[in-house]
Amino acid sequence: MKFISLTSMIVSVAVMAGVATAYNPIGQSCSTPGGYGCSQDAAVNGGNAFIYECASTDQFVYVAGCACSTCCVATTGGAYCT
Image (cartoon, rainbow, N blue to C red):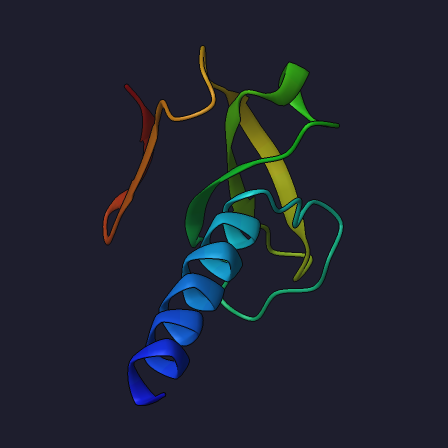
């Protein structure tokens, strides 16, 4: 019984992680101006990944689109398309 519960929990976390990657922060508020990130959403950049920034207006803005849905890398120094 414990094995089934643990398996269910692992599957649930995996599903939530998959949902978290399809996220569109554009226009939402942020608190770290100058910070960059990567995201992917079907409604932005044709479903491909994109780079966003926390602008000085404390809102996320679109910066650049990438060529595929997994072609974006965010680091502590910024974000870039691969």
